Image (cartoon, rainbow, N blue to C red):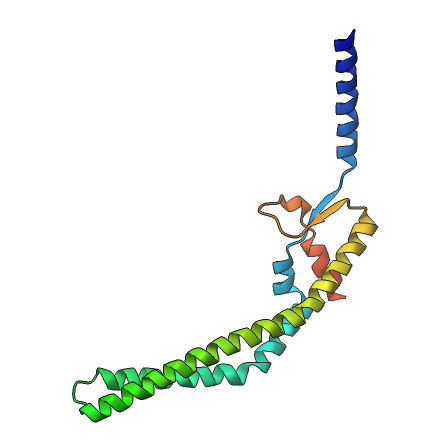
Length: 162
């Protein structure tokens, strides 16, 4: 009698689990794709590129001078004094380049994070609207694999275009 009762309960649990699983609606959004393709994200990237263009150009000039110095140092016809002078200039240039490149990278990443916070906030707001409107139970952003049928990224991109 107990085993029949247990089987009946297990069967009812399975049926109710299947019924609730059928009602469960899952979605996924690729936030990196949103950062690459959304109009606000593209505008931010252009703005940042313009903002940091002068500093990047300065680094390019430093790279060019370093290559010139490498070429000069490769020559065996240099006097000892010229070689030492070029080596000192190259070492100083390398130090300055490394420091400026690190500073540029840190500043760029900080500005990028500040600017993209608004895009992420807006994308999250759009996701909540989609979830409410289409009655999603769960929407994920960071997964290893997802079946494309659950991908809501296209819908989010369309909403962000508005």
